[in-house]
Image 1 (cartoon, rainbow, N blue to C red):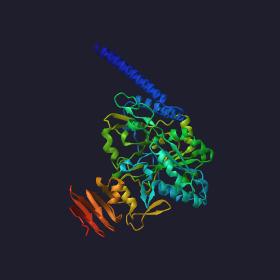
Image 2: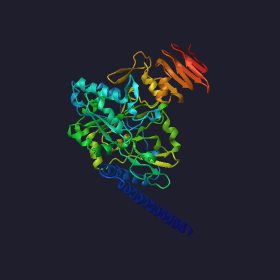
Image 3: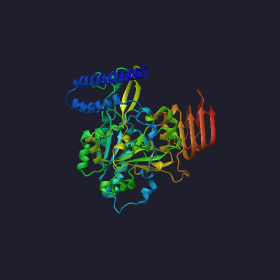
Image 4: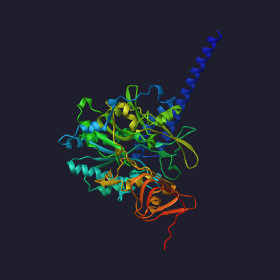
Amino acid sequence: MKILFMIVLIVQLYLRMAEFQEKLRLQHETSMHAELEKLLMTAKGTEQEISRKDFEGFKKIFHRFLQVKGPSINWEKINKPPEDLIRPYDKIKAQGLPDSVAASLNKLVVVKLNGGLGTSMGCKGPKSVISVRNENTFLDLTVHQIEHLNKTFNVDVPLVLMNSFNTDEDTKKILQKYTHHRVHIHTFNQSRYPRINKESLLPVAKDLGMHGDQADVWYPPGHGDIYASFYNSGLLDKLIAEGKEYIFVSNIDNLGATVDLFILNHLMSQPKDKRCEFVMEVTDKTRADVKGGTLIQYDDKLRLLEIAQVPKAHVDEFKSVTKFKIFNTNNLWISLGAIKRLQEQNAMDLEIIVNPKTLDGGLNVIQLETAVGAAIKAFDNALGVNVPRSRFLPVKTSSDLLLVMSNLYSLDAGSLTMSKKREFPSTPHVKLGSSFTKVQDFLTRFESIPDMLELDHLTVSGDVTFGKNVSLKGTVIIIANHGDRIDIPAGAVLENKIVSGNLRILDH
């Protein structure tokens, strides 16, 4: 009897706890809705209309955030994807190309994710306007690539930029310089969501303004917002009406993400009822990529697994290059018709990434984000293609910038390709210290970019400058201790060298 009584008591406690949690959830949701309505009352006309659309999306993600209990992944249910769902690029390339690829190209749209600022590299404004090669910005190179395609094949591949409220105004001003280029450029904005007080779970914002103390209370909710924002902008329907069928999506700072005719042909050559609606380009993982998302088989679907979803006990296993051999480059080929269908059915259900932040005043907030690649599970006949590493060339730091500015790469029609003079196809591992973080500081420390054709590894730390025509080979480590300075003289050849201490070239 005692045991039965205890069981009944535990069940009652469990039900009361569940009831309490449901009441709390409803309370949070009601309070959030009321606060959002107050914010909307501070705006009029178009601003209110745009914000209302954004807030509808935010309400959905907030509702799901309150309902999520525990990890979204059951580690035991993870399986390696079947071989036929991760195709080697060489097999796709071996199919060759038809006599004319113009028909396929005319059904393609290139979309670049352009919501990021250049602040991590010490620059103001959109990251896409940082000069990366021969005075060309990320945006310049993208326009040159697409213009070259349009001229070469006499086609009309448009460029679409997904901006954020951080980058939209500056980007639109810059786009005027491309008026006479042979490429149609469209833009749309991703949503603007309110940051949430971590304790109260209410918006930090007091009104819809973004100036003064309101500047950091809003955020763009990750690139997974592309589906809803693209659909809501009306541009998705416009492009479908023009006969476009696929978008090629990539980060604007990935200089390896050019239109690949072989992948496009593979998509377009399938029977219409068996078409891949989603292709994710993956590439082999190295030790530098251990945090990158990977593809798994889960509930009989191809699914993206991000490190944020991994239980702590399995993080080391996730980072293993032997078990999880590939990672997501975020180069994606997606059916426009399928995006429209899934949006209208409200069938995306992207995993929520909870991103904690601390504002300048010390307030702890959270922002709810989603990733574009997480939608792969919602699309029919989804596929991974294991592409060469050359299609993943992101420029996130000044160390990456040094690589793409060097003679390791040649520039042709906006595309960077590895120099044939380089004996190894892999790029050197470059690690520049904090003195090189800001682009302006980085540029003042190099009189000219060193010859790096035979470089394997470079580490630079402290106050170091490079003269003209320096050559770096093998493994080179240069460390200037605090208070010391090292000037590498013009014409120096450093091969398998460690330079430390103080080496200063005085002006005469």
